[in-house]
Length: 113
Image (cartoon, rainbow, N blue to C red; front, side, top):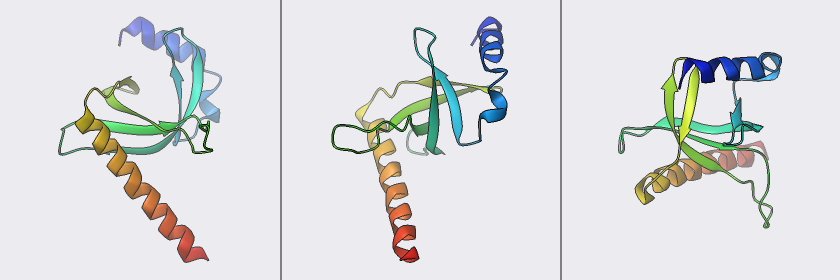
């Protein structure tokens, strides 16, 4: 990421940083449009040697399920670049991690009842 890109990001987010919690981040699409995302899971995979982030924008699909996305995280100081997942193996790593998280959350809900 260039210094120019970092300055542009900092400028666009300077008034919003105080409203962003640790489990949220602002992302930009190819057109420079910003969107708030919520971290579901962030982890390193020993299987692939990469760092992953599963996240959502809290939108739901046609079946009422929360839409979730996954990316490879490339750290650059205080900034992160999200790269697309390019292999079926990597998608399986993300899906397995999300399934484990979902099972853990379901178990906690069952304990509360």
